[in-house]
Amino acid sequence: MLQVTPADLLTFAPSLEGQELRTLHRNRAFTVEVEGGNLVFVNSKRNRRPHGGKYLRAVCDTFSKTDSYFPSDYRDLTVNASYILAVIRRYTYSQAVTG
Image (cartoon, rainbow, N blue to C red):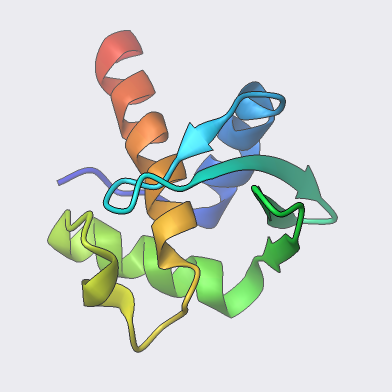
């Protein structure tokens, strides 16, 4: 199983800035930015959702144990798991290609 940390995602996410991303299960469009140690998800309605700290860590820790890309597996952690999981999917793909 691939270990993913908040630091990994915060380092990787700037490479995604300006790209339209899609959630994995509902196919919702969004973009991601990094601001002040947080991932900031901007949905199609231009609503900004900063996500960092304990929520980002909790999703990364759970993913590192389960390899699950299903937002329902993170329901008790955060309502924004679908965005984080899409970034994790891109990150894990980039590691497979370069690693």
